[in-house]
Amino acid sequence: MTETSGVMVLDPAFPTPRDGSAPEPHCQGPPRPLKSALLDAVPGVVHGITGRVPGLGAADGNVAYSAPRDRQDAWLMRQRWCAALGLDAARLAVLGQIHGAAVRKVGADDAGSGARPATDPAGYGDALISDEPGVVLMTLHADCLPLLLVDPDRPAVAAVHAGWRGTVADIAGATVAGMRRAFGSDPARLLGYIGPTIGPDCYEVGPEVAEAWLAVAPDGQASLRDTGSRPSFDLRRANRHLLAAAGLEPARIEVSSICTRHDGDAWFSHRGQGPATGRFGAIIALADRDGD
Image 1 (tube, rainbow, N blue to C red):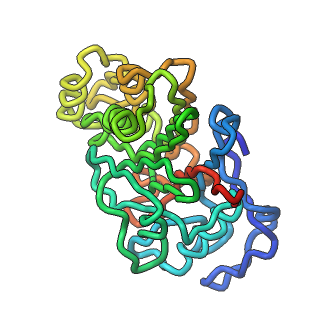
Image 2: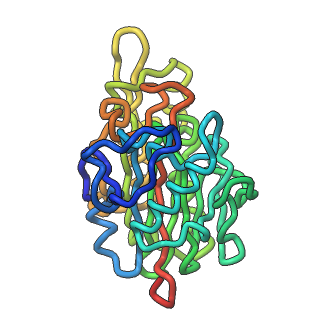
């Protein structure tokens, strides 16, 4: 599935939800994560954005282990989504996300860190970078912006979680800088995909957020809108601005138009559904050398 807000669909063999309800009739076929046309054209790079699956009961596509969600349901969903991409969920590398700008390089030894319930994460931060084939990077989202980066030359990949805090801390620029240091990546050659996130019409913030944004991007006024009471913040435009400032070519950045709050049937949204909602995953990996 490429850039559509349609409902995610599942394999007919998918087990009955743990709450006993039956999947709705539209939950047929294999799971189909959302993909970027830009990144999908890069040989040897596998990626996808998972989503919400209405009609599946308690599991509903969630890939996060946070309470009150059932961890085994989430592990099952991680396996299903990864299998849909031809990836092994046991080789996931997942961070403990902290809404900052810390970037973690991960390698073969980190595969599996944070993958299964009760396993330690691959460190703490909000961006993962790797040039190791077969290591599956995943960040977790429910309104916060997912950013996937590819260096087609090295090759190397990155997965980034950017809420407003990470955005005003310039996690996008920090990730580009991290890839340059670790892999010799040329920012002008990088490809970027900004995935589904809460749109500006649904994302009012406090004045302190606007002030923090303009402190890091004095020429970034276009990412703010005056709604009359509180400003609204355009995470897409802001992170595209930061990527361009870090050296990416505008033509090499793809931006999803999907708003997670507006399309809550297909996406988890903290603002739309509350703190107990699930999380979708932004997944990226270099294909294993053996073709896995």
